[in-house]
Image 1: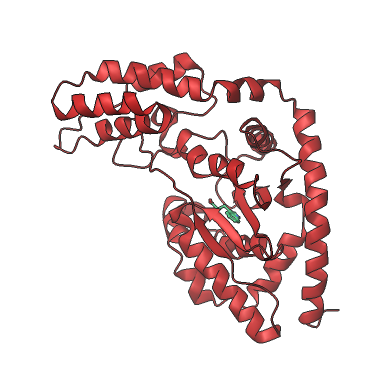
Image 2 (image 1 turned 90 degrees about the horizontal axis):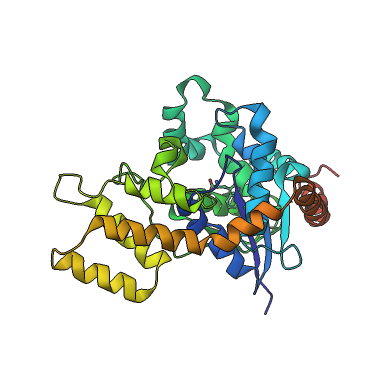
Length: 322
Ligand code: TRP
């Protein structure tokens, strides 16, 4: 049986919050133990949103450090930066020629983002899913670990692979989506929305937040939204389940059901548990220098590029360009 080839990408848009972490890095660290894995910092995707070119490099380095500090090991997997492997962009162009515009018009993420950045509905934003397909197909990846929100992009990737194969001969396998068990983490201040950096720093717990910052943010977290749903309270109890031990979770569950729950107590304990959960991570991150992280990712990018270039040469021949 052939080993799986796993690929995933994360956009460099600042530090990760606990929701991002649970949806990506936590799973990547497990996957690298058993499979042939490639993990990319997808910087060319990130420039399709409004951004500041002066901080982009820092964001790439920051995310690189978080990959390493979370336990991704360049001896066990390939860690790279998308823009260092320009073959991705070349394949995206080729895939553009087999992708119907009408399919891209249906992408809900595109419509959402276009609605939010009305002054910057650029062609790159529209083409984003094709570059994502290229990220995956250039390595003939078999499996892509992502959150539920990426399902439509993965389905499109499979369709693009199929269209290409039909037109130019069997080249790509259709990659599977690996929906990792990703708990939905809600905003601390608006618990009806997903935790997101765009809502503001106080809505999020970043994985490198210091213990006192975590405590302050949780102290302000909304519990009862007054709509009878208590989404905030539910979110906090869910977080206890993820970051605390089972007994703590059971205790708070029981207290909640019997109406004896003290939110100040829960928040205090949760703050301690989250701080503890990421304590090794914070120490590791602080020790990694910019130079070191660059070195790791440049070396990884060369490894990735060797594979990408080989596959791209085959693809160019298939389409009559060599
Ligand atoms: N669109 C993905 C996200 O926002 C990021 C991404 C880009 C990706 N290229 C990828 C994920 C390739 C998986 C595989 O989460």
